[in-house]
Image 1 (tube, rainbow, N blue to C red):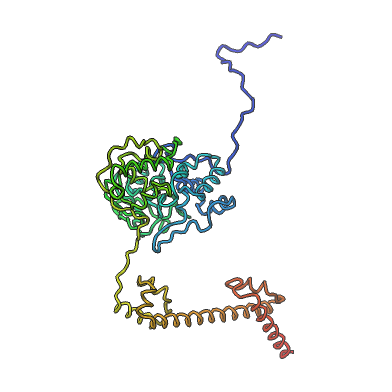
Image 2: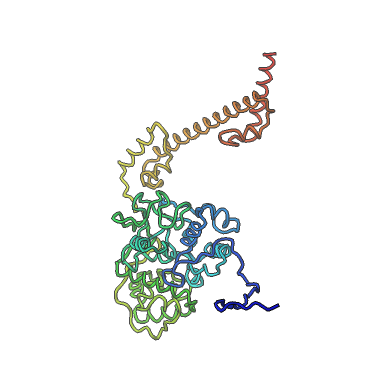
Length: 468
């Protein structure tokens, strides 16, 4: 039989390689890539987790409760954002350099199959910086950056730079970061429980609204200084974040001590402390190696010796190279800014407010509620008006006892009514089914419910005897 000859126009292909291909192990969640990884505007861990939840079409709260909490990371109340006294949300620790951030980054990394999520936090500097005053208490953002990213079709995210307490200005647009929603004027947590990135956790509106931007520096942990200083500090920390990807050698306490001894020889201790804007005691403790500066403290040291923050933290600045200091003194650095200023006490006005509170008919306030409402300290109130304060406490206590008694009677009446309904429906009377059927399940103590059920059974027997 003559073999068939292929036509001239048929192309001969190479044989296929059917050997098995080594596939990487599958991850529990999507292998999402962080935005701007390896740059100074790298995405923060909270923003990455929010985008990860959006990729799975679930909320960040649902992803936390279903995937992260079973692996012992995060907290159930981590999405709380209190605004009393000093606003600080629980999720601010996720971008910090403590154990909370390390555990959360490790767990999310295992779920996504990534081993580099620690660069989305300040963990590369954990051996050098204390945890205090690293991350801000509430979220901050630049509306111009958010709008430009959205209009150009780029991914909208929150950079790690914006989550740091020492950064109060956008280094690109040189404008103050915002911390409250332009619509409802509420501070924003670093990670919303049920809202997408760059949207208000309360009203769910866009945070980069045009023409409605409000300066909200009252929620900054550190006071806002001059624009020149704030822009310089933002650029220094921006370079520091980029240097964290290169894993530089860190400044030791001995190197810092030698630098400070050199600086205090050029200028006296008090003069150098005034230039840096910190106390002379802090400079002395740093110089003797008793404590370490915070990130704002390192910024002021770098400013005073006229060096970059990255060179200072990397330990490349030699004491012999410091010949002169920056002559422009900085304002004094306070650890935490007090958001509420102390109110001046007016005795006549406070007395009138106490009398009005005593005559409130609906629900008399407690002394704690009264001082929160008026802003007076309880010790000041008790010092000037002890009788009125005691009368307000007694009245609130009577109202509280009456309210508790009324609620107890309503629960007992509901329990009796439920028990009678159970008997009329033909069910045998037991404690647990009756307590489960109440509007507030198990709203009564078990022993009290047992005593009431005994009385109900006696009433039912007495009623049946009369009918019989």
